[in-house]
Length: 319
Ligand SMILES: Nc1nc2c(c(=O)[nH]1)N[C@H]1C(S)=C(S)[C@@H](COP(=O)(O)O)O[C@H]1N2
Ligand SMILES: [Mo]
Image (cartoon, rainbow, N blue to C red; front, side, top):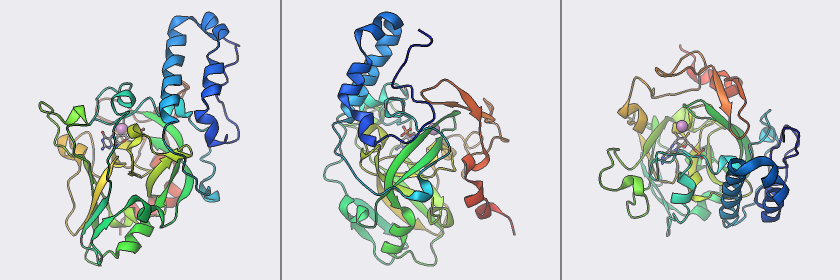
């Protein structure tokens, strides 16, 4: 069993073509009877879930974009889609990470538009196509949740900076606030009885928003975002804890005053407003020194700014 080859347990290696992640044949073959007999029921059960996740993910349309060579290699093996897409934080659907993908599988914001409001020259609404026309690219980023798990994911998106230029941010603007969708009919977590202040809201300083690393993602693993990843459009800020990367965003508001943010407002002593990844500052209930690598069970040291310090540390120097 220990030395049995598991084709889906990818170790380090070259980036595989995104299509491979969703190949039904690959998953079904991998789940052959021999595997089940050797591995037992629990193991087989988990593989069945991975097959179901992969089959569900294969329903999202392909989305192609040139890989930006500056972000082609995040220095870590890519997390398999069967892991990244079955373990999600998306409280609109469930607080249980393993249940989100199934509860969200029919979620769809249609028609979708992104509202742009506040201190900009050209307020209004943008379609998904208008956002993507600003220049889609593929980037492999490290991603670190505040709960000390981490993954490495190939996003497809547009640098937020390009959108800021497109709408013409006014000089008085200092912050951008993001608002996620509100639709209790589709999202069980938003229904009566939920004590969370929906819709989800997050924000960045304008210099953080304009940083080249900050991405407006509409795809992942070579396809449009599946529902559990924040379809059809989310923000990705790879040097901050995951909750600073809001999903299913429907509105951006440019402001002079610092906007409140969801987790910081709920529990300020556990979740700071800036929330840059920092192994030296423990969460009150756990250490941030190491992180669990999704899909492997291994742990590794957490890096300051999630390893992006060279690019972003200057944003936080005083004086
Ligand atoms: N709208 C919304 N966005 C959200 C969340 C959420 O619950 N709702 N969870 C955040 C947290 S805590 C994390 S770690 C990431 C998880 O993204 P993933 O499920 O794609 O890995 O999404 C973030 N964005
Ligand atoms: Mo998170």
